[in-house]
Amino acid sequence: MPARATARPHLLGGLLATLLLAGCSASGGPAAPAAGSTPASRSPTAAGSTPASSTAPALTRLRFATQFASGGVAAYLAVDRGYFLQEGIDLQFERFASNSESIPALATGQVETGGVSMNAAFWNAVARGVSLKAVLDQGSLRPGAPFTALVIRKDLYDAGRGRTLADLRGLNLVNTPPGKATTNYCGMHYALERAGIPDDDIAIAPLPFPDMPAALANGAIDGGLFAEPFLTHTLKQGTGVFVMGQDAMYPGLTLNVVAFSQALYQNRPLAKGFIRAYLRASRDYHAANQGRASEADRDQIAATLARYTGLDVATIREIYPTAIDPNGQPNVESIRYCYQFFRSAGAVPEPVGEAAMEALWGLDLLDEVLSEIGRVEG
Image (cartoon, rainbow, N blue to C red):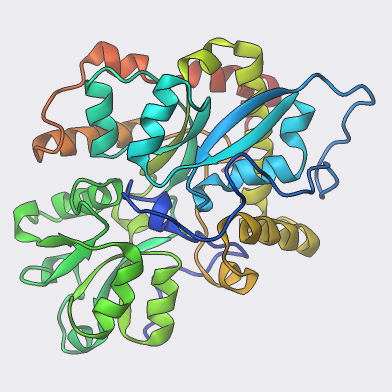
């Protein structure tokens, strides 16, 4: 298998990006805690945690929409390490099968916060008047973290086909449903556009991430955008070749955000407490991926990911990590770019007005917290 385009980062994997990326409409998922439940260990005893005060604050319950994929890693860590408890928050996880379910749940107050993919379905909901606030990064294509990548079937690659973006014409490629109306395909469109390759020249059929390895192995497809852990599984099998990570297609593209309901956003002390806890955990995770954490700390993070996602620790250690900005900052420019792509492709028929676009962001909350706790290099 040819060497990958980037060096493998330290420790952690971007597991089930099946669900994290691209706003797929997956159903089910790996074994994970039941909705509303968290692992038994919630005391802040992990490395890097701060002891809680002797007088514990009254707890406010918040419900977090998740698919128990790696996009929720900061929330999982913040629960396990007691960071939310120290902010007076009892965070409970509510399982949703897809973005299409979690967005209306946020809008109607069924949950107060959660991770959402800013795909075409998201923008269609906003265009219909669904109201929520996008506040924090929950997964971006940061350089060095190719947790989704273009993979080409090995026999085709060895024959000289599919080695560059310009070689993709005529190949039978796939992406998670619905195909092109996803955030990770938006990243590929960005790269095609800069290479001068018309989007119409590339055929993309919808296929769920879990079905891709077998389809590639039996010759049913020529390649596609593979996500972890299916990316590493395919490369280890030797049936596919890593051509280009999506971190190289659109460096910095934000795929998912943590959104707040309007009610949570308007409760400034509670919302800021959530952000503080989330950022502490994001920074723990970032430090581990950068090799700036102890082995014991990395082990604990891997164990948390395994418990919530249902993957084994060995798999987590093998696959590429999800990247989350340690300052929580989503790349707004990239999100606007994808909105315009979806509009031009006809995937978002009704436009989102500029006033609605501006009202979508809750970054003032993030800025307030960062002014208090400081920024870190990311």
